[in-house]
Length: 67
Image 1: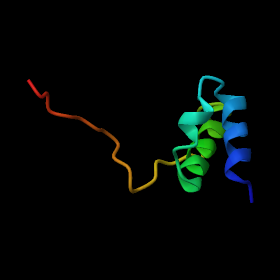
Image 2 (image 1 turned 90 degrees about the vertical axis):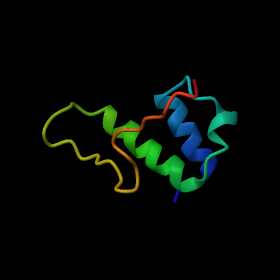
Image 3 (image 1 turned 120 degrees about the vertical axis):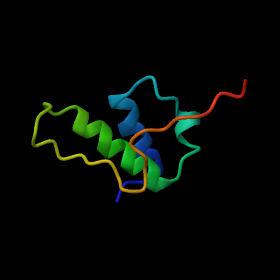
């Protein structure tokens, strides 16, 4: 099992713009989910893509304007 630091290193290899301080604010499970998603993005797109949006996340998010 990867440590949180190892996952952050792996994320930064795929997404160099992701800052370590920002990533450290997430728990192990959130980092694992993000790393899995990033790894799938390296594969060719198509019908057989293996990444699926977790059931506990909304497909579309919106907010009402404060004004």
